[in-house]
Each structure stands twice: as C-alpha cells, then as structure tokens.
Image 1 (tube, rainbow, N blue to C red):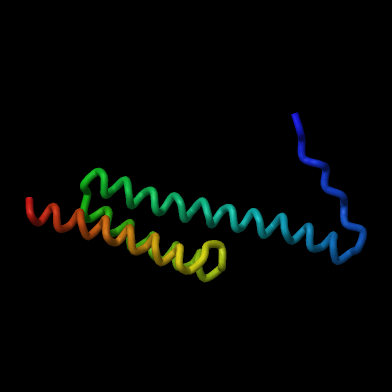
Image 2 (cartoon, rainbow, N blue to C red; image 1 turned 45 degrees about the vertical axis):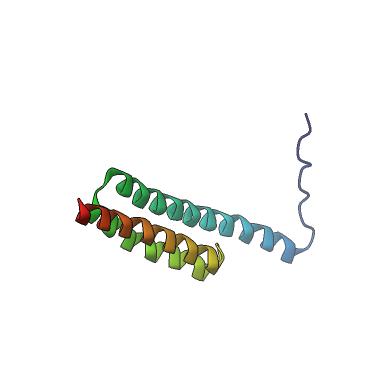
Length: 101
C-alpha cells in the first residue's frame, strides 16, 4: 500500500509562516464549503418535502451563503451562479406546482 510521502518542513522563515497560514486558510475554506453544501441540501430537502414557504426562506439564506463563497473565491462565480439558478428554478417549480394543484 503506497502512502503519501511525508512533507518536509520548510527551511526559510517565510516558508514556515506560509505553511502555518495555509493550515488556517484550509480550515476556514473547508468550513465555508461545508456551510455551502448544507445550505443547498436544506433547500433541496424542503423542495422534495413540498414545503413552499420553508423552501423560499431557506433559498434566501442559501443565496447569501453562495454569494459569500463566490466572493471569497472558494468556488468560481459561474458555479455559484449556476447553483443559485438551479435552486431558484426548483423553488419556482414547487410554487407553480402548488398553485396549479
């Protein structure tokens, strides 16, 4: 079984500082990425459940999270726009389906 080679410690002070900063940045980015996925998942769950008001409310929160993530450069702005568009379409389809029923 091949294992990853152990990373060497940087010799230069600037390299050591960069390594410390990378750990913090990685933790922050992972946290935001997780928050993003959770927000999207919650909207989709509400749509599947057929709860129009809850879906619309969660979508509004998800929109701001998606915008934050694209502004920080964690996800590309086009991916963020695509995901918002798809969620909006699902919420809108749910609203029209309930209006027709």
